[in-house]
Length: 204
Image (cartoon, rainbow, N blue to C red):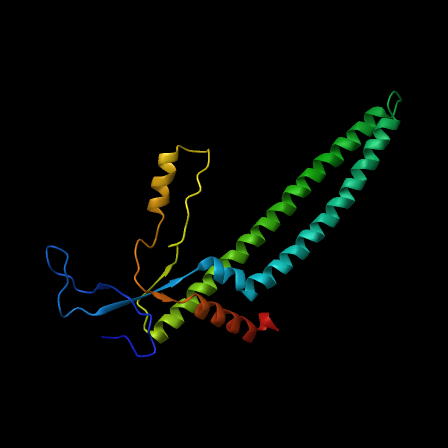
């Protein structure tokens, strides 16, 4: 058996080499050690995520400031258009306002796209780092499988689909149907990820 004395919460959830027709296991099979991770808790405590979100907030503030400048220009152009109403300059003022409005909307879409891409990059980097840290810790501690802990998930229906279909999807999405006493790796993963982040140039 591969369970060490420092591993009190190990759970034997299966046996490698099951070969009987009724699903029972052979005596010679080796134990499978499973750990669970509360992903939401890990994400909530990550310094990597917090640092990235601070940068995203700064980017959003910069975009807001640029947007305010354009809004001010639009307001001035609209005022000029209203002032020119009924005069020979009206058409030119309308064209200038519409051109400025079009350019502002294009800029806004571009800025929002940049912000959305940066948000996706944040979660990609977090997930990549999490999987790599889990791999290293699993190798060191002898964990065979690490799964996201959704054992406490609750069903919250919406009005966008039939209730039965929603609950069936809820059942399909469950990763853990039963676990006696699995290894709770949440604190271990979170602590090691924050240590790795602080040790790198990102944490300076």
